[in-house]
Amino acid sequence: MNASDELARLNSLRNLRLLDTLPSESFDRITRLVASYFNLPIAAVSLTDVDRQWFKSKVGVEHDRIPRHKAPCAEVAETGRMLVIRDFHADNYYADSTLGNAGIRFYAGAPLLTPDGYGLGALCVLGAEPRNITDDEMATLTDLAAMVMDQIELQHAVGRIEPSSGLPNRFQLLNDLSDLAQRRPGGRHIISLLDLAQTAQFDSLSRVMGPSYLDSLIRSVARILNTHVGQDSTPYHVGPTQFAFFAPAATEADLYSQTLLDILMEIERQSDFHMTMTPSIGVMTFDPTEMQAEDVLRSLQSAVQDARDSDTGIGWFSSATDMRHRRNFRLLQDFPVALETEDELFLVFQPRMDLDSGSVEIAEALLRWNHPVLGPISPAEFIPIVEASTFARGLSAWVIDQSLRHLAEWKAQGLGFKLSINLSALNLEEPDFFERMMDKLKDYAVDPACIELELTETAMMKETDRALDLLQRLTDTGIRLAIDDFGTGYSSLAYMQKLPATIVKIDRSFITDMAKGHRERVLVRSMINLSHSLGYRVVAEGVESAEASDLLQTMGCDEIQGFWLSRPMRADALKDWLADHTSRASGLA
Ligand code: C2E
Ligand code: MG
Ligand code: MG
Image 1 (cartoon, protein in one colour):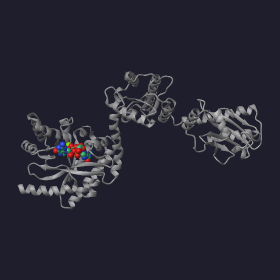
Image 2 (cartoon, protein in one colour; image 1 turned 90 degrees about the vertical axis):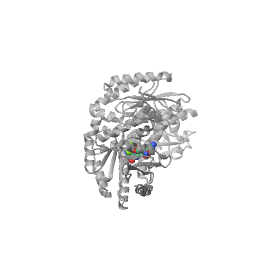
Image 3 (cartoon, protein in one colour; image 1 turned 90 degrees about the horizontal axis):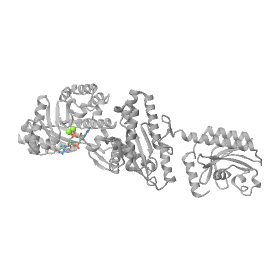
């Protein structure tokens, strides 16, 4: 056997992941049968590793391995043929082998052959006396070896086939990708990942249509992909809604997008329910010797995300967007750790001034994240990522807890200060949000009137009667509600009127734009007037200059927040700032 054949043989043995696994009754049953059929004390399923024979199953021996050197099973594995040693003493080669020295006189071993012809080892039977073997016995040993092989294949297939589609799964794909590097090195391949629907879509589809509809959908998708990849390949069912597949040989990357578009159209035609599903395909070319199997799959996931955002539903892998996805993924992964770690997250506070009196009684609590490796991360970057995940709940819980802790501390120091806290849309879906908020207020002995909650227009618009009810219950306790980033969403004034909000925070983009000209100023004035006529108190965000502040005052704006007044600062700095501001304001008065 030459070195490369031996390498391929070892590779297929490794892929079966049998070596050093626990004993299993399904193999032991066959081994016992062999021993009793031959009426001999020893039988084994013996696998030929680099330098050892390892016994997956055995009767009549204590140890689970012998050296490969001069082991008859190794010869069986290498030649792929049955070997019989009638008497070790009469055999020049094996007489002084490990078995020979251990008093073994008889050996018969039938090869364990994979479908592609590699010998993994032998099913063998051994005796302490010289012995002959009949043709019938040889045939039976060969049959039983085939049964062992069936058992190996079966065990291997379990966990590698997705039952709903009958297609090989993600583990098989990873396996095949590693194989590709060895079997066909030096070539580029095109691989695609089809995602039928986002998990949330799939779940709601499953609720509405029932699981059997989905099963039949999956089967028809499997059929379409099977036709596409042709006889020599197979699609892989790598996740509940995801399929991976190689492009047929000699496919040209430039022309392949059109083929993929045809596949998407075909799927949509089969699925009947276009509106609930947005199938997308991520695709890439790769050289298997240059990329780990796991990386191929990960890059495809990144391409699928791009595909979802594209008009066509097809996304070619791009390393630039991949970097962004990777960073987002990392931030999302690290965020729960940050929640548990001291000092990675902290709050800063940006004061808000009443334009009439010049007094400052409230500040906005803003979250900061000092990532241990990536450094300071802007909330504008990490909050949208976290908000799209279930960690939004933990984020808000943390911010609320810390805000109340600060309020309690200030109260103890005689500072009757208020905080406004930003919430996410997802918080409104938490069934116990109200109760937890009340518990916290009680724990810290903070008056609900010291709290303002900020929600963006978009967050409020999405909401249901239940969310409306939650907001009502919160405001009934004395907590105030502000509409954040006003003017950037699509609010329906009729709907906004239903909300128990009393404060409108005009988004800073409108305030910045006031410097541009008359029209922009008219716009801000109209926003203020409209909000006033609907009964809201108006806060201007992002006020960066004395001019803007003066202008807003003449327009009748109630409060300002922005760098001109102060940048957001840590709690201890805020205390000094407030003392300073109060003495300045009273000095001016
Ligand atoms: P936001 O709630 O509209 O907060 C105001 C943002 O404008 C803050 O940015 C603040 O630092 C910035 N800002 C204030 N004055 C000025 C100014 O004069 N000029 C300019 N250019 N910017 C100014 P920040 O802290 O980066 O927060 C960005 C966004 O992240 C916030 O917008 C808010 O949507 C979100 N966010 C921050 N903290 C939290 C939090 O604790 N929970 C939630 N859910 N969202 C938060
Ligand atoms: Mg805000
Ligand atoms: Mg804002």
